[in-house]
Amino acid sequence: MVKQMPFMDPPAHTRLRSLESSASTPRRIEVLRSHIQDIADRLIEIVLDVGQMDRLNLTRTDNRHVAFGWAAHFCFGAALARIEGQISFAITLRRLPRLALQSGPLSWRPNLGLRGLIALPVRF
Image 1 (cartoon, one colour):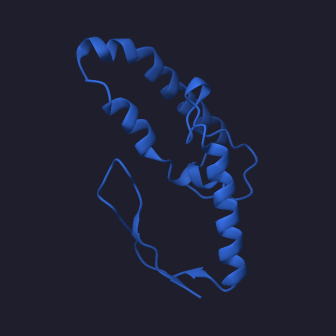
Image 2 (image 1 turned 120 degrees about the horizontal axis):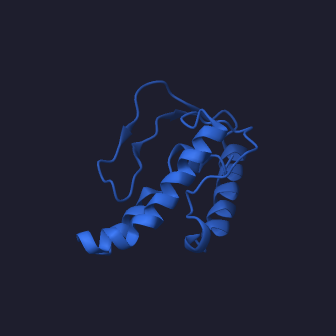
Image 3 (image 1 turned 90 degrees about the horizontal axis):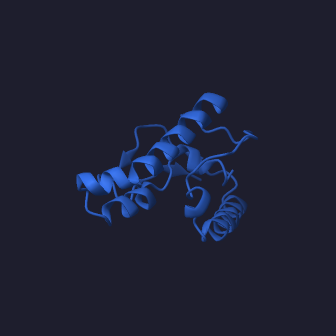
């Protein structure tokens, strides 16, 4: 389940942080062009191979997302983040076995740098 969550809402702040740290001058953009193209090509490849990327599928076995980076830019904290997610989901579901989402629209923070829900209506 934890590996599937980045498909639905990748940590966009990780990509934005690296792009914002450099001035967006024409020269700098040209330097980054091949790197950006590699990432875009990889994302398109994944979407074409896997399909239905907009749906949470906890049984998906092909899990080649780039939510924690890719290649030399892989996040060193990815393994820890996954372990923390597994532990927190397991404890929450053990303590609240009837936990379920309430129906209705979800509200997202307007911050592009650190995306997240304003609230997650649940019942238990």
